[in-house]
Length: 181
Image (cartoon, rainbow, N blue to C red):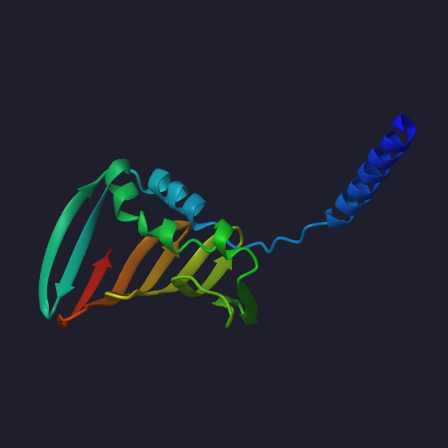
């Protein structure tokens, strides 16, 4: 009886190990998307202590400020790049890639969900020239939409534009725009 029990246990282990080996993929194919969080950190370091002109429009009213920036202010100003980063675990395999000349386009797949809907970018060498991202959250109580455009010169951010709107339930749509040069 002891020998029969050992044989049964041995057979169960053999079947379990053989079954587990089938689950192990030969190779994992992970699409390579640009990492805007790394780009943000590079820009914070590259821009350092600079002056910017920031114009903010809210419902047709505008305000212009000239600000002295340092690395902590740049980190705060560019923190949205973490949200529009296609290189996040939840987006692995979620984007359809296409190319239009130098323009590379990542479009969120039809059956995929996420607030980052589309990313278009051009690169020159290792650096970016332009990035245009569409971010759209449609929740039960609000809708939040942003079109974000970044332009670079010689590897440094030269301008930033964010056009968007927010619609809260039972409230009017609020339109906003931010421009940084």
